[in-house]
Length: 390
Image (cartoon, rainbow, N blue to C red; front, side, top):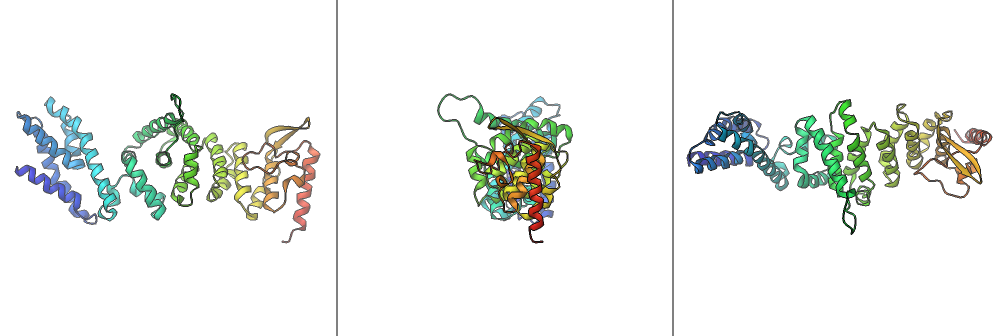
């Protein structure tokens, strides 16, 4: 009974002490270690009731019993080894849920270091109203996933891959009739946040290619697009920005540029500029980024586009009235510069635009059927710039 009272008192201190009392917290942890060690020894007691009582008290200690339970898994007593292996995840889960509930009830009552992923989230995404709302939504559903941020990076990498595949399969996997499931925007955002924070080496990045592919495809689901387009979801867009910023795989980046246009994510303009000026990016990815600049940029981006007026890299071919044409990087750069200057690209001889409006989701129609037409368009551009006021 005395031991039980000690545990309850200690547990009460852990749960309700102000987060600013770091010294008290350290003292509680130091006091908990010998108690947890004694309780682990009781797991091998001859009396079943005594063993169960010790198990309950260890779970209540939560993470303060972690070291003792880990050490107990090497005990010479097989009963202690077995019970410690079972109790460790239970104790950590109970402790995590207690800290989460405490934070949700009163965010000021607990330090950021004690809440799963909170310190990283605040550093990367911020602490404004949008950020707080997003974090709380993710925490309610994915506290265990967020806590993985504070653990082993390689294990986090495995979790990221596994969870991404599971979420993808839940939407695109086999299902029997009815309406196909839609992705929950919070589920997807939580994984995007995890992926943006993976401190992985190059081999890990390559392993994550499949996970990136799963997530970028899920981002085109209407449920996610509707959520990220909402003016109140500024933090969600910031999470997406950080994830895209770290992508080195061209497929994810190309689709990311398309997503930016479709969802009207104007704040992603700096990312598009960065992609254009990253020489290691494939030409077609940089061309997609030029469309983003053309849609959301200003005249300030025209000089940057002009640097690519000599880039003859081939992007694709088109056919109009049985006449073949080609699209080069310099054609896309010119079309976007014309648009940003307030003019109309079709007035410059872009044949495929003669009977259709300028579309910022693909670039294959932004070419010319002949070298002469291309040269005429560039000459007209130079003339317009000479006339424009400095």
